[in-house]
Amino acid sequence: MNVGRFFHTASTLANGSVLVAGGDDSNYTPLNSAELYNPSTGTWTTTGNMNTERAYHTASTLANGSVLVAGGYDGSDYLNSTELYNPSTGTWRTTANMNAAREYHTAATLANGNVLVAGGFDGTSVLSSAELYNPSTGIWTTIGSMNIARQTHTASTLANGSVLVTGGSDTSGDALNSAELYNPSTGTWTTTANMNTERQNHAASTLANGKVLVTGGQDFNIVSVFNSAELYNPSTGNWITTGSMSVTRAFHTASTLVNGSVLVTGGQDNNNNYLNSAELYNPSTGNWTTTASMSFVRDCHTASILANGKVLVAGGSNSGGALNSAEVY
Image 1 (tube, rainbow, N blue to C red):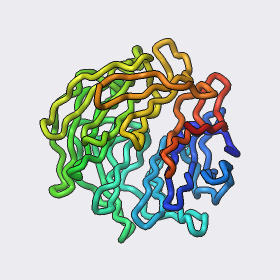
Image 2: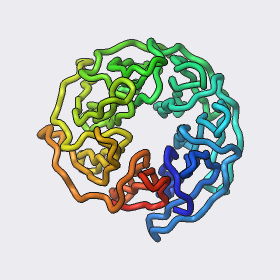
Image 3: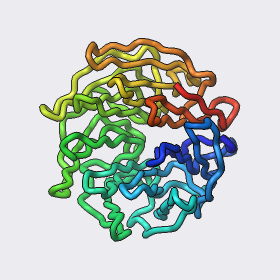
């Protein structure tokens, strides 16, 4: 990449390119720069800057091809601002503000094209609030709050259209094992079974069979890092443990591949070591196998599935600071 960054976002565009936006540099200064990866040439080019520097934000690809970036932190303020990237022009424009400033939140695209933003941190409190962005009107609408305030959680869209939110941490720093479901038809949240392990800064992947695989993460006040994994079954609403990863990891990525396997990359282990290791989860057996390591140790990076089925890993951080390196699996 042209700029080293971590806690950025990466969005796959309709033309197959990947848009990387924002994040922190080595001095933890949020960036407004954005750049595009072209899989055909394997090169990066700069594109228009966002209107606001931001890290710890979300990015969602809309049905019309635009990318919605929401919230985050600009180095001094927690943000409720949002903006849209137009791939045709390579420019950003502001759209309506969210009703709450938030970082470390989640954003999930619903079947009707709306974007559900939930939870996060506003600089004072961890949030339970949630809101919907309507791309047709450009307006945010506050909806029912989650049952539990949380940040550093995950949100996964299920085959039935519901959104599963898992784990995270509360205002006191406690890691959560709770999970809840958002029903777009009713606009309400309902609790579902708790995970077997409290976890934050974990990863969640939707499998081809409709189940959700949750991997790794950290416990209360980031004391322990886990190698455990568990599966959520939407049909029963229950969690079952599955095979553990070979390495403890948090701040990693987990990508569902075309063949149905899940590729986990990098992160940080229980001894605060940055990782370059990668492993594959086989949903048929519930087992993990190691695969080739990345060229660089990294955490807080992004992983994007390309049209050819390969995975682009970009940026992140290690003991040397923010990384501009990228590699393809």
